Length: 130
Image: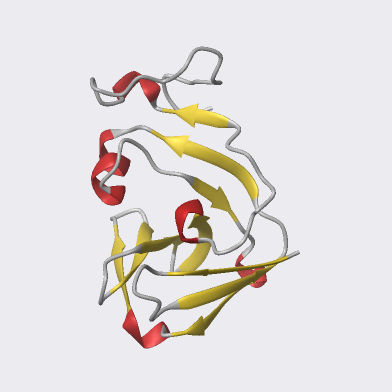
């Protein structure tokens, strides 16, 4: 399966030649801030299956002290992928152009979700990570 994705302004694009796995939505306070939303929507990808096809020079990173972080478009601010020790670890599902044929399998850190968010009954939830 080949998937493509891009940032909001279209200046940065990527391609994935392989499967996505472990799609999840994180509701922790850090993800809410990083994604400017009630939660993240993220799936893992093998670094070898991922490549930038346009605008790599327009990327900037935020990396924490443990080597985990995000890569953003400098122009529009779209969060495109997660990184670990400068390797792409996963992608944000919202920037995909194609149907990834994957569903979010779990909602994590729901114990610290925003008070204004209502998660529907029956959704697989974990107070912390699973």
